Length: 364
Image (tube, rainbow, N blue to C red; front, side, top):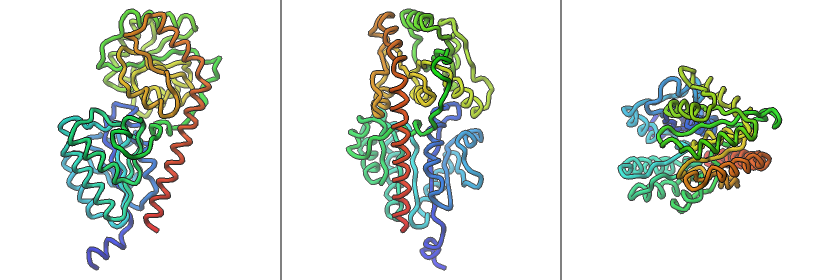
């Protein structure tokens, strides 16, 4: 049997890129959802996890029998498996942020080559909801070409879609992670805070606003850790706010994720500058709020895509009274949050169904 005939008779192959840090619940969340989109699209599943440890595979729910490639040394094998894949392969890129700053040109050239190879084989290329960060040339030009050559290209914010000049605006894939009933409104008694450790501590006005808001609404303050590098910041915030610090510590990531989601189920409001903290909070029925000095546009843009605006306030430009008013306003929006999140989940289900239809049509 010749090579070409062997390829035609071989089972189809799906390849999924799933790199990411095991210490980031949000990254695991969106990659798990991207993997779920890929499951069942081929008889053979190949995933590339970079330097991800064993626990990363468990976090993502990588099925038994999957061919797993790990470490930079396996990149050549990954490219070989794309090049030698039977007809109609499926290639699924990672969901999340796409860094296009200087130094990423070669990587984007490789991704463009992967895309074109799959298309030449009659396959389907899927780019789950993503957002472009720090675009520079030639990385942005190469990425835009690859995105336009893909059959499914989704952007979680309008600016990224405009930069790429193509694709479809879609909710962040984290909104597909399951809507939860959570506790009834009158049983929700927590204000949860989770901020990035890499940014400066908020000032006294911010602390005053948050503590007075909690006192006025009868909420207890708890600081949580959704990204391991933020653990010390959560400890510091608990001390400043007179709240309770809920550490990650040595807890298994899957157990910790479950505990976080249960805590969001009991929260009335969650303050964070981590996007997927707010996504999980909204899925649990808590009001999400980004209240930090000089916030980036990342969170506000992604939530605007699902029709939820006004959840971000620049603490550097407002007094403690202004920040309190903002937080009180967010508490009145829980019905709106639930409606927008439900719409986002439905939209993602529709996009997944269309993607699977494209794959079936390509192989018909």
